[in-house]
Amino acid sequence: MQFDTIITGGKLIGGGKTVHADLGIRGETIAAIGKDLVKKSGLGGKGRNGSKEIGASDTRVIDARGRYVIPGGLDVHVHLALPFCGTTSADDYDSGTRAAACGGVTTVIDFAIPYGQESLQQAVDNWHEKARGRACVDYTFHCAITNWPRHGPEVKKIFDQGITTFKQFMIYESQGWQSDDAAIYAALTRLRELGGLLLVHAESSRVLDFLIEQHHTPELMRKHKAMLHVVTRPNFIEAEAIERVIHWTRVTKGRSFIVHMSTGEGADLIRKAQQEGVDILAETCAQYLVLDDRVFGGADGHLFATCPQLKKPRDQRRLWEGIRRGEVCNISTDTCTFTRSQKAMWDGDWTKIPMGMPGLETLMPLVYTKGVLGKKISIHDYVNRLCTAPAKIMGLYPRKGLLKVGSDADVVVFHPTRTRKVDHKTLQTNCDWSPFQGWNLAGFAEHTFCRGAHIVDDYKFVGRNGWGRFLKRDHVGRA
Ligand code: URP
Ligand code: ZN
Ligand code: ZN
Image 1 (cartoon, rainbow, N blue to C red):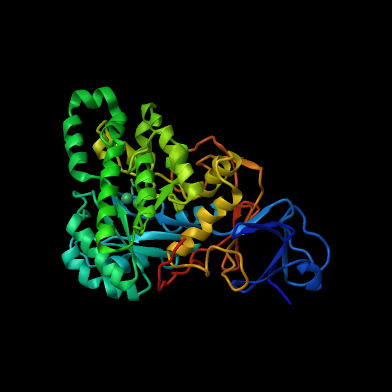
Image 2: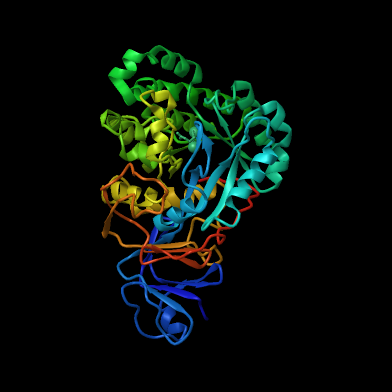
């Protein structure tokens, strides 16, 4: 059999197993997994430095000896070029998906959000426009419902366009995005009928607004600066909102997914609800696992502002436990990049900080280094939570999320211990700072393939804009 690429000698990870085998790619899919593919396809010799082309034919041979070979990662929570907090997030489909590729992520899911009186269709069309011709890795969208009475009747039409996951926000009234309990109840009911999934940003807005108002004085802002972001978002703000989502999911017999869960209390609630048979899932994000709220005390503390807030080391421990046990089903980034000058809009008032951080390029290295090398999770948990489970839940499996003959050839090769120092200047992001500046991380992609195309070679991006394709979905699944 002839291949366009053979990845030889690596340790393939998937389905809880490690397999020592070669992997052959033809066109856009995985064509073979087995022993001695180089010899069997009539090629000889050895690759050099894990990356060079050898042999007389056009077949590229990647020498992956001593490396892990895993499915491309899925970051199912990103915001690219998002108009938000009075500005637009700085990573778009060009820089954001280049960053994804270098970090080993080959599929991203963004949120199409309607603004003002826009329909769901207008929001989806706007997001297609942002991505078309620019995306370097595959992508699809969740669609945000911001006004149930107007958007509810459109849900089926959007579902039929391949968008099977929808989102509601329990906060962001001033953005015009907030949903109340009735809207959440109605969306859960409608999506149950269609077989879709409702994603929810769970924070308790009324008490949050009350705390913000209480602390929004010149004296307190001078005294506590960015730390007020922490003070006004205690853990119960997330926990109460998750309790309500659990309640509405239970009574509607619907299916929900808590996005960017940040608290130990949240993980406890999700675990209990799942044990009681409520069909609810929850992701966390890398920043909640590796950063805690002490960063707000630093001179650049305001840069770290995101929603929900970074929490305490005890929350990190509980979230890692949730990843091991499964009540935390996947890890994403909530990438929403703002540069230093955008963050400077705060001018001492924490309520004006553009909320969000860069993360796409560091997701997999962070979780690998702190999780696998830090002995919090196994390499199999790692591949499951970053590749397989998100693909299943979001209706992309078995096209994505596993190494199997017939699946898309989304493949990442990485060295198990070789580290690189994070420096925003050498990352693909448009951001001029990194929350992880100076950290030494293993797990950066030495090679990334997206649908068979070699888009990262020897840690360098070699892909192209427009290669990334919109992924039409027709279902959602289970982890
Ligand atoms: O602060 C964040 N996370 N910004 C992006 C919007 C959201 O809530 O996901
Ligand atoms: Zn959110
Ligand atoms: Zn988000």
